[in-house]
Length: 315
Image (cartoon, rainbow, N blue to C red; front, side, top):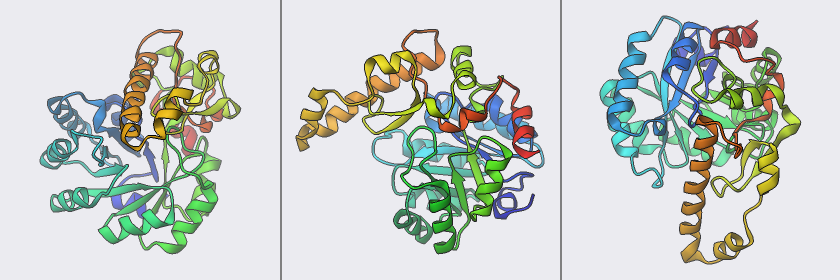
């Protein structure tokens, strides 16, 4: 299928394997490229710049015709590694950068100077217009069915709105678990889709078998919003442990959040504690199961190789 996104990235299918914190890795993206799609990895999945650089070199060596790869950058002040990560990515080169949580202005300028395309996460028309004005190559419409930190508008409402108002391609992010979902997003005006959760239950994913199996065993009705990870609502699987600890901020956190001076520090502490708990659950066998996923796991019926997941999405 040919769309603006397949042409921009020279890929066979209008699909981007979404960047997933702690989950995405070079093995997944390499197999994604072999399957004719684009793959994206959060730069923050790498602890050091040398590890980030090594991953780029590996993906460049494994790139095949019909596939593409890129990196996700958190571009606000919370990511103290941002500028150096951007420098390394621009030095080594990739097909695209996907920006989140901040102004992409610097990223667009630096990336375009070396021929790297930039796609930007947006959740509404206001920010979509801003990134278009800054020169973004596409807007990633994060809708209400996305996994992790999601938007407020439905896939149809957000994609249709942005497609009508923007002059750049729209990539719909959230709510895709099967080919019919992709067809729906394209019918709303999307030039491509960003797909994350269905790839968690893959052979190549570097998370525990328990996490992968949970994406098989649970479904859309088992996805809940929690404030206990980053302080910002985030979708997770409603495991017995999540039910035990609850999904709302504690009374003390709510009280401290009312203080403008303390609010930033409370959120930083909550983010650190939540990310450590999520990392432990993703990488180790533990009863403290905090597994991030979206409702599209409804269509995940088995742990499969990346190539087979792609075939299920495209045939």
